Every structure is written in C-alpha cells, then in structure tokens.
Length: 207
Image (cartoon, rainbow, N blue to C red; front, top):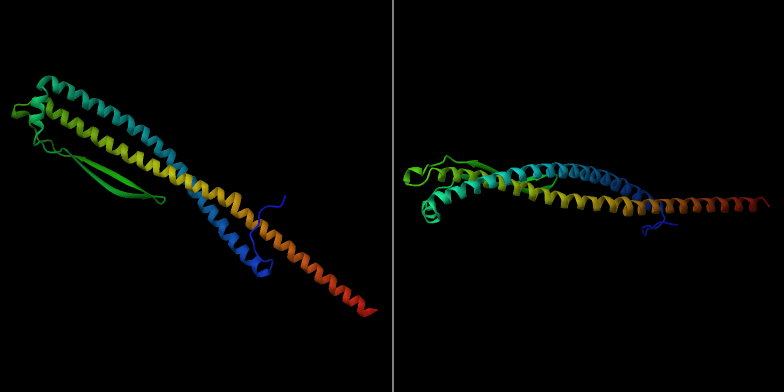
C-alpha cells in the first residue's frame, strides 16, 4: 500500500529541497526525542521529590495542629485570639521564577525569622512553640506547592513533546520519505524513457 505523500512536482530541484528538509526534520526529531527523554527523567525525579516533601509537610502540619490543640486547652480560644493580634510573622517566603528544559515554574525559598517571645506577656509558653511549628509547616506546604506545580507543568510539556515526536516519526517524516522515493522513481523512469527514445532515434538513423 502506497503511503501518503506531499504534493510536489517530480523535479530534481524539488528532490534536493525535500532531502534538505528531511535532514532538518530528522535532526529536529532527534532533538525532540532527547528533550522528551530528559523531561521523562525529570518527571520521575520530581515525583520522588513530591512524595518526600508531601510526607514532610503532612508530619509538620500534624505537629502544628497538635501544638495548637494543646494551646487551646491551656489558654482558651478567646485569649488565644487576643494574643495573636499584632504578632509578627516568623517566616519569610520568596517566590522567584525558574526555568528547566524550557518549562517555567515558581521556585520557593523560605527562612524562619527570629522568634520574638510573647510568653512573658501573660500567655502560655506553648504559644511560641505553636507559632514555630506552624511556620515550619507553612514552609513545607509552600515547597510542596512548588514541586506540585513544577511536576504538573513538566508532565504537560512531556506530553506535548511526545505528541510532536510521534507526529514527526509516524506522519511528517514518512510523508517526506515517500515523496522522495516517488520522485526518485519518477526521475529514473523519465531517464529510462529518454535513453530509450535516444536509442530508437539512433536505430532509425542506421536504417
């Protein structure tokens, strides 16, 4: 069964142009295949990172709420709400853009700030400990968000690269090869016909 071809005139110039274009497409296919492999490797790496940071964030959040429960029992919700007013943040988060293999995603960095104790203002000492645990949990959750977003974008880019690789491998490149083969056969047939006609003319001249 004849494969699909590109509509092109069966000439030598067309053949040369198609061969140049085919070389370019094959190089592009190799580069895309390499990018797809790197993206796939990076996706699996990110999956491992996500699972690790997810467990860490879960444990940090669990500890933070454990301390909050104890604090509520010791101080009560009303006193706790009053003590929380005007408390300075203990976590400094910075979000910057980052690129990897052409994929952009946010990069999160965080720093725990020095804790200004408020235990001397009539609050329970566990108030400061609870603040610290929630700051650590917030940092872990922010990092988990970074890994999750980068993972989703890397997967989307990997699927896009896979579609392009498949389009080149199974559709575009075969069409170029079929067209080149068709034109080569047509030119060879034309050359044979021309040689045959020359032979006929020479034979006629001999008669």
